[in-house]
Structures are given as structure tokens and as C-alpha cells.
Length: 148
Image (tube, rainbow, N blue to C red; front, side, top):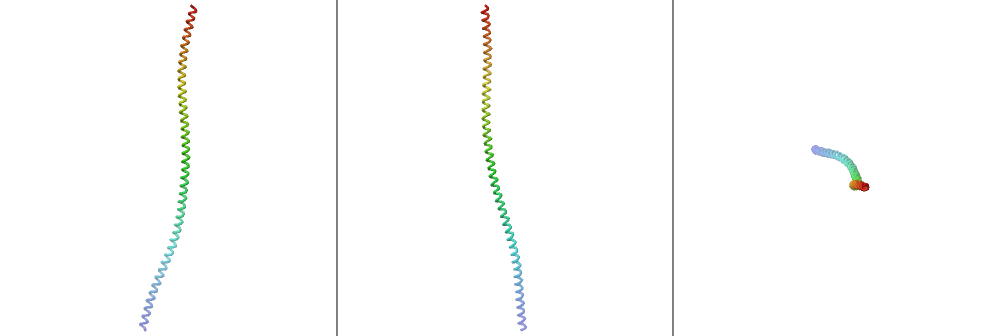
């Protein structure tokens, strides 16, 4: 019985070793599982943080698109106003050019009329002078005929 008891103790020790080994393995796996759960919680927290950051960035992007659209609309309005102002200025300029051209033509016509009137006046003065001379000669001739 001593050998049977000894064998039984060896088997008990062997089973105890296996049990300790299994307990150690379970303990290690439990630690690993705890670490994995802790890491999972940290990753979930990081993921939530990234999701909030993404939501913030999406909101900022939306705001930027909205601001860009508003700026584009304002730019279009400014361009329209500037086009209208330019059109009005060009119409005014065309009107002023037409007035200037008319004034120049009128001035040229008045200058030509003035020159023609001056020439006519000079011609009439010359004729008047000739007529005076003729009259003076006629008066002199009559005066001589009467005196004779």
C-alpha cells in the first residue's frame, strides 16, 4: 500500500501541478482579458472623441461652405452693381460724346458762317468803297459840268 499511496500522491501532485498550471493560465488570460477590456474602453473613448472631432469638422466645413456661398452671392451682387454702374457711365459718356460732337459741329458751322460773313463783309466794304469812289467821281464830274 505504500507504493500505491505513493503513486496516488504523485498523481495528486501531478494533478495539483496541472491545476496550478491551469489556474496560472486562467489568471494570465484574465489579466490579458482585463487589459484587452481596458484597451477596448480606451479605444472606444478615443473613437467617441474622434467622432466628436469629425462632427465639429463637418460643422466647420458646413459653415465654410455657407460662408463661401454667401460671399459668392455678395460678389455676384457687387459685379451686377458694378456692371450697372459701368453701363450707366458708358451711356453718360456716349451722351457726352454726342453732345461734344454736336457742339464741335455747331462750332465749326458757326466758324464757317463767321468766315463767310467776314468775307462777304469785306467784299461789301470793298464794293462800298468802289461805289464811294464812283459817286465821288460822278459828283466831281457833275460839279465840273455844272461849273462849265
